[in-house]
Each structure stands twice: as structure tokens, then as C-alpha cells.
Length: 74
Image (spheres, rainbow, N blue to C red):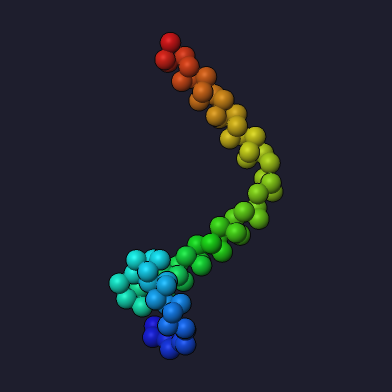
């Protein structure tokens, strides 16, 4: 989709330099993708602690895996 926006040239140039983008469009696309990714991570982090049984199960699985590893490396 084509969109016209007004952004300070210095900011876009800095964005291109930081992202290693070859074009202004690539720099903007990368910035939008990163903003979306960060928003999704923030939403995911809000779930932290909401499912304590998953944490307990993961710790139990880690302990079992560690015990198995110790048995096989003796």
C-alpha cells in the first residue's frame, strides 16, 4: 500500500543508518515491523504470572531433563 507521510529527513537518515536499510521505504518497513514486534512482546509479557501451573510444569520438566542428563553422562 502506498502512503504519503511527513517525517523529518534527519530522523529517516538516522533510521536508515541504524537499521542498515538501503532505502527509505525499507527503513520505514523495518521500523514498523519492529514496533509491531515490541507491542506483541509487551502483550505477551502482560500474561506473565497468569498461568502459574505452566511455570511449575516447566520447572518439573527441567529437573527431569537434568536428572536424565546426569544419568546418561556417568
